[in-house]
Length: 296
Ligand code: NDP
Image 1 (cartoon, rainbow, N blue to C red):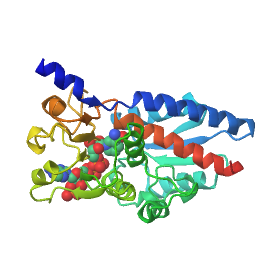
Image 2 (image 1 turned 180 degrees about the vertical axis):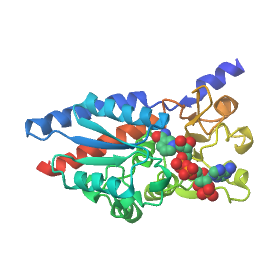
Image 3 (image 1 turned 90 degrees about the vertical axis):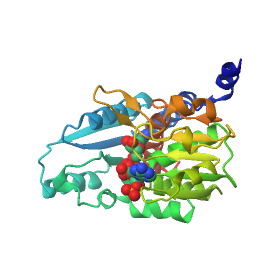
Image 4 (image 1 turned 120 degrees about the horizontal axis):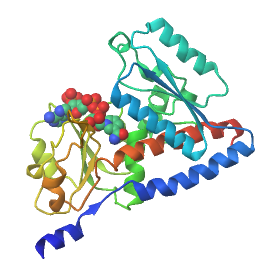
């Protein structure tokens, strides 16, 4: 009976019902745009053939097409020069038919020194990496002209959809990257959470996570967060951003799901949690970009 009690108590924060609802909204918006002769168009820059990147870009394209938007994956050779790469981006920046453009990371070595956030014009930056878009979340005011980075935006959408209170709550984020941890810390602060942004130099991480109401794992270490990071309340919520793969292509989150499942109030699964929410946010941003054309 004890096992049944725990299974019944832990909530699995799956993306699918939220994705379904938002897909419907996006389809309707897309239809409206097309009636006004605007077809939302995303270009995805893929340099080289990193297998994970190929899968991610294909998934993004599929979801765009599902809602009725256009998506083209621009495949560039692994060895492309910096000059040629910049030229491709400049052409896209000038192309009035393209509403959004994203650069799939990681980039090959000869391009890693580039500041990707500044390469795509702010108004097409549906990944939300441009300094002006980042400033909007720092400031805590988002207008329809600003794009919020996709993974952090998807996390907030999921938390709100499951009506998880954020105001006044202690949130510990593990990982301070520019694409997840840092922007998420701002968004959660804007939602009145009290945020601790932890990283590899953080001392006494377990003391911090034990005090958290919500723990976000975004560090890229398979099964890192186990029971020893949790307190005994069984009331903590774990958001698992990690996507880690073993040699056989199996996917693991940053949380040790089976170890902590019975000891948390709620947890996002991997796959099926934050991954799909990220793609949903991207296409929301694309439609937001396209809407600017007819200002609806
Ligand atoms: P990065 O590698 O850019 O950053 C990792 C962060 O984790 C760094 O800040 C690092 O600290 C910190 N870190 C690493 N090891 C530890 C440790 N032992 N203890 C505490 N902190 C640690 O990762 P990303 O943000 O790009 O990605 C994180 C994970 O999320 C990956 O698994 C990635 O695949 C996944 N991801 C998933 C997405 C999705 O759609 N679901 C989207 C984007 C990423 P320091 O700064 O000190 O080095």
